[in-house]
Length: 440
Figure (cartoon, rainbow, N blue to C red):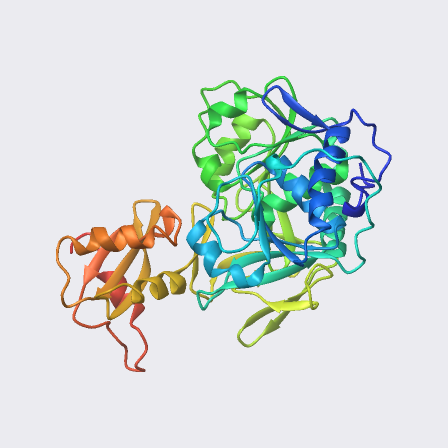
């Protein structure tokens, strides 16, 4: 399985019409189904003037059909990472229309593929050589940043993964507890199984009990530290060829518990939306070091680390993580430089939450900090709001829920007369965090 199929060949390769592409419970979709389902979207899109189309699907098979139709129609797929109406309105400048199976009230064209009739099969136009996919990631300023990933880079990334792990994945089914609408899930729940010809689950695993339903098959499980922490080891485990984790640090105790239940060590991926995969490690022992992929290069600079890789659009980018290398070229992670935090593997921009707070009536200034309670991280908001009362916090939470995921809405609140500053007239973050000490 070291010869993955490039994305441009997913429809025009030599796979048998009855090859299983995806499944949902007992339902399966074959290669023939895939071609038919792509065809009806493709035929419609070819007639549309817009160049960029946002794809908003919870079902990963439906997402794949829209992705292929968009690319073969000569359009650019845009993956906002969500289906929230209010935020899509804000992002509308980035796309002409939306393809989704969710009802959306937007001022741009919205296509539900289920409303389209099947059309006669015809040859698909080749995907343009410079085609790519646009994803979004939180920037340090709080504004969602567009990241353009060329198909060449996406295919190259899969070639690296196939070289590293392909031989272990024969006859696997792919299941995942992460969304395909962000790069990690997109790479491992869409690109990898489609390239290697592995059937993939169209729905996301939310609870450990759902894994047991797949006990009849050998599994490749795409997961995250948050899910692995919730494993119920009293359940009967299916057979796993491999378990991959990313999007947050996997602690040693979680990895050890997972090893006992999965009967295989968890392999972990390090990377970002901007960079793609950078390094990997296997938790067969405590605190393993990260091993860079062969084509990735790290260059230390005064303000951090720059990374160069064939997967990066533009060739190089600055990392927000602090790295500590050893003489053998492997490394450890030791913190971050920016104001992005990860909660339950979600990348949360504290700056964006502050920007949303400042837009609310009555709030004159705001600062958001991570708050530790036991072993869990939540968010605390320090606000200057002279006219606030006991009802205000509830109203603020309700207003933020239009824009933010529940996990990004501050759980703890402090109303102050002014935001504390240090001697350099910058925000005194340590002092602000002290406001949330449990003694307060």
